[in-house]
Length: 129
Image 1 (cartoon, helix red, strand yellow):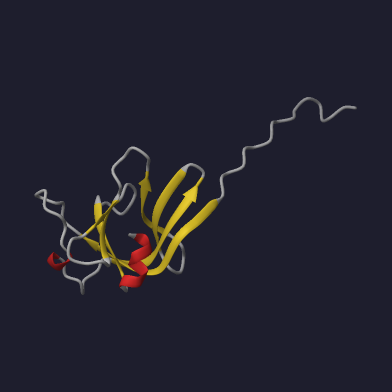
Image 2: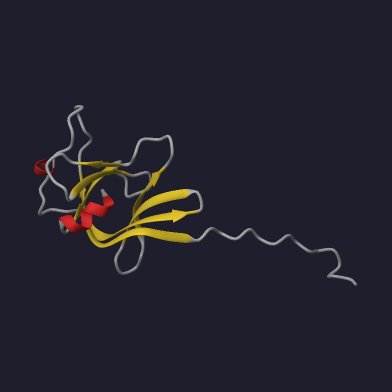
């Protein structure tokens, strides 16, 4: 039986599903200067009342990738993302003076290499840590 004149194409490979591993609807981003010494980051060095962005944070697994995404709460537009890769430095670093503040080294964002992310309360930060 003929099946279309020989122009059949192999089925397209399905894109991996995105599985949300952790999600917080409210987090804040501060633009922080690059670290000048080996000392750890400190939240008390930043103006906590002057954040640069507010949105949602998601940790997702997609295929072989694990990605931390910062997205607009309403539109889902990507603000920044960081990748967790085996054999590479972890992109999240806790600050030494708060359980709610973290430094996130991002690869794709608005132009800064390091951002501080802050959760509205410590209970939301614990699972992220």
